[in-house]
Image (cartoon, rainbow, N blue to C red):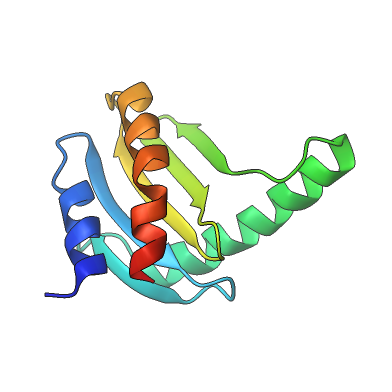
Length: 117
């Protein structure tokens, strides 16, 4: 099994995570571990478009480059995390997810994820 896929599967196996994927800056799936009900291609394309919009929003507000963004929905949370040399890690978290622990883990493991790309 590829190392990146192993990391994404480990994330997806958390009880508070429904899946994870890494996209390229062009919106293509690099690797994923998602529930069958989630369309990875659609998620990657939309996450990339959202990240571009968030970049523009942050620039307009003078807030610098967004590193990690959470979109809290009624059925769960979507986390977008920019990887240091490009691409985006997308995590689909459950409604009752421990977001503090998840955010900490994602920031702590971002360099290791980046090394696998």
